[in-house]
Image 1 (cartoon, rainbow, N blue to C red):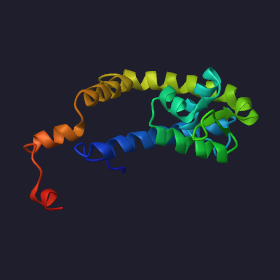
Image 2 (cartoon, rainbow, N blue to C red):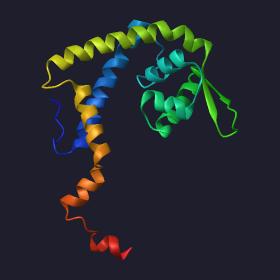
Image 3 (tube, helix red, strand yellow):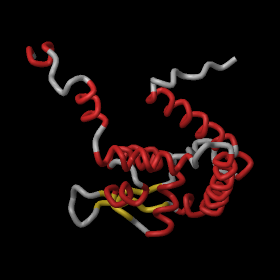
Length: 167
């Protein structure tokens, strides 16, 4: 029997939920005609580029709501898998992401996957005390007001430990 992560180990719990969702989404790909190397993290980027056209990595990160580092890592994976091309921008440091012809051919399957996942998540939300996305957005909002670091420091009295001071 699978063990449930410790509810106080919130990072572990979040990763566990994420891993379960991603694995189940990925298992639908053969039925939808998506390639073996396609990953759930590709869909938001593919959809953003299909909607907005070529974007810098920074713009792509902003469009999907991830860090620049996460967008860059996903883009590198997608380049390797033949889904993106990265071309120089106006600034030599800037890279502009373009969907490849192969990625454009996959867009109907990506859009179908997106619609099915949205419908499945709505069904899952019906079993939860609150819609998962609403809870996660509320967490982001609360952390934007006061970071977890600030909360940790105030829970511990707000001071630095002796070992922190010694270094």
